[in-house]
Amino acid sequence: MASIALKNASGKAAGNIEVADDLFAVQPNVPVMHQVVKAQLANRRSGTSATKTRAEVAGTGKKPFNQKGTGGARQGSMQAPHYTGGGIAHGPQPRSYAQRTPRKMVRLALASALSDRNSEGRVVVLDSWGFATPSTKAAIKTLEAIGATGKVLVVVTPNEENAIKSFRNLPDVHLLLVGDLNAYDVLCNDWIVFSQDSLPGTKDAK
Image (cartoon, rainbow, N blue to C red; front, side):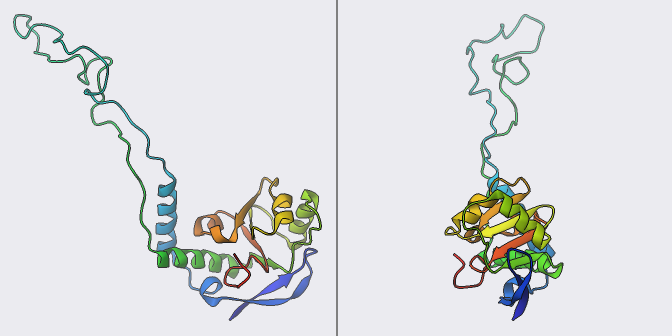
């Protein structure tokens, strides 16, 4: 199995921890990551854009003028698209943008993203968060101690309340439960920080 250096909240080495090869040591598959991320973003779209057709706009059903004798082209309705206030021709209608992605592909995309960050040395595992009480100041010191700069993804378990409350106010930190870990959020951040409990592939990660 592959291993990642284990650190404490002060940034000092605390040994090594074995990680799952199929999550942190695979050859990144760029096409799969692209497809999964594209599908994930598509699934976020509400698809509620809508315009009214000529059958839906309000207005009279009377012909605007006589069929014959005016010298103009015949017209049947003031709700026609070429009239002001008329319906919209070929406008957007509510639709679903959802894309179905196989679970194996989703897992491969996540493994590819984690493996890519791990190959760059940007995955950090802490033996514990070290927060006796919630403290944003302590959270900042922890990130500085481990050298995590830029955008940081902090992965936690629901039981790590002190860590959640400590990191949640930092603008460059994105908090995520380990059960919600996905390729898009991994790729959007420069560093990925786990605790031993939130490290995926272990029995403690929930």
